[in-house]
Length: 330
Image 1: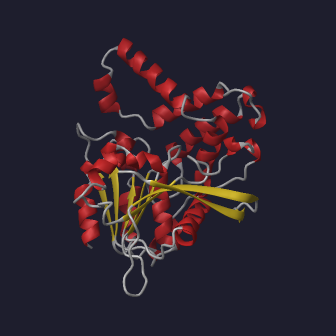
Image 2 (image 1 turned 180 degrees about the vertical axis):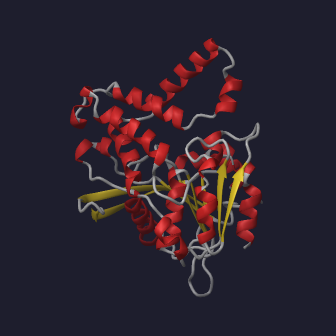
Image 3 (image 1 turned 120 degrees about the horizontal axis):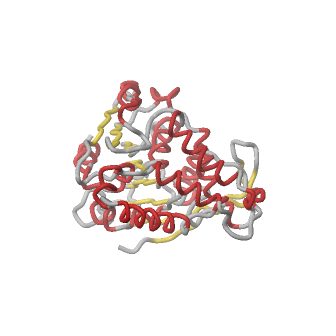
C-alpha cells in the first residue's frame, strides 16, 4: 500500500489571530483515486485527521491501515480516495521548527480546519466527502467540520474527543506541558540551540495525560520494571518532539469549543470514546449530555478491556469497526 505524497502551498494564508504566513505548506498522503457521479460530485473521498504531535503517516500503520484500507475492508483503498493530511504545525506541513521558531504565527484548530478544507477542495479537487473522521485532536476537528461545512460530508466519526471546550484537568495538563517549555530558562524565547530541559518536563505531563493504568500495571508490575518502562517512554517521546513545535501544538487547542453550534451538524455522526481514556474520562458525562443536541448523533463509550489502550484506543479500529460499518450504512 504505497501512498501518493503531495504538497499544497497557500500564499499569504491569514490566521484567525490576524497574523499572515507568506507561504503555508500543507503536506498530505493519499490512497486510491477520486470518483465522481454524473453530476460531478465526488463520491468516495475520506478525510482522516491525526492527533496532537502526530501526522497522517500514523494511519499507514498495520494496526490501522491493515484493518480498514485493505481489499474488501470498510475503507478499501481500491474503492476509496483516502486523504491523510499533516495538520498545520505537524509532520511535513509548515511548523515553527522549520526556521521561524517562536515567530511562527499562532494557529488554532479553526485555522487547521480551514487549511485542510482548502487542501481538499482547491488542491485535491474534492467537492464532497463520504466520511470525515479523526483521532484526538483530529476527532475534535471532526466536530468542527460537521458544524462549519454541514453539507460537505455524508458521515462523521470523531474518536477520543469531547464536544466541548478544553477545560478542567485536560486544560491543566496542557498548561503543565506548555509552561514546562515556556518557563524553562533554556527555552530562551524559542531561540534555543539544543532542546531545553523543559521539554522533558513537558513529556512527563504528556505521559500522565495518555497513561493507561490497567495496561501499564500489566506491563510493569514491579518497581524496577516501572522505572525501566518510564525511562523508555521518556526517551521515546523526547526524541520525537521539538520544544517550539510542541508548545504551539498544545496551545492550538485554546480556540476549540464546538458546543455552541452542535445543532448545525446534520450528517450522521457516531462519536467513539473509551472508558479508560484519561484525557476524556467518561465520568465527566460531557459526551453523553451534548450528543443529544446532534440531530443524527450517537455516542459510544467502549468499556475497559484487555484490548483497549486508553486514549490510544482511537487508533485500534478493530475495536470500533462495527460502529463504522453502521455509520457508513446510514
